[in-house]
Length: 283
Image (cartoon, rainbow, N blue to C red):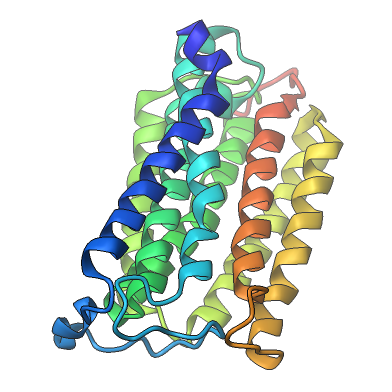
């Protein structure tokens, strides 16, 4: 297992290579076949992205499709972290590393976002647009659930990192229920209200937790996550207004790339937190 952990980037690269190979094989097998035209009941996607669409192609927006690969790379890395944490969780300094299931689910969120976004841009169909939004929701909702768990641990368990099957099970079940509810009911224009609201709550609770219950953390990880996030958001918006459909430079592709780095460094920040040890737990 230690050797696997040491080669986690190689393993992540191999997964990305396999994913790329399968998509290129799919494109080669169904090129100019109008493959997605048969799924008329799934309807064309209502959302807009700049890159020119090859409506008869198996991959209608290649740049926006393959720019998701970093999400898969980082997702596999995070999943490998979870297997390493499972070996040494009793000696871990924070709740995320001790509850190694959280790293597993966080990694799966990144992988899900990669797969769903890739199929959305390959097909440009509403069905995959909705799944893509499920991936986006998951990458905000799950960190929020983790943060709530950390605050509960601080308030009622003396802020000592602890492993809890029931605690993590309830947290993950709450996450899955919330993800299904939001994705099923609010995946179109409502997203532009709900996502910023969830993000604001996450930031507020994270600041509260860090100021009151954290002894130290890697500021460089948090800074890098913030820099990449605030580089990603303008790219998402600029794609609507500065569009060159046939260009190899697509703002939406850079949105994918910067967002992947932001999520990865945010995860590393979560792993770096070292809790304050409180004298008394609330009874």
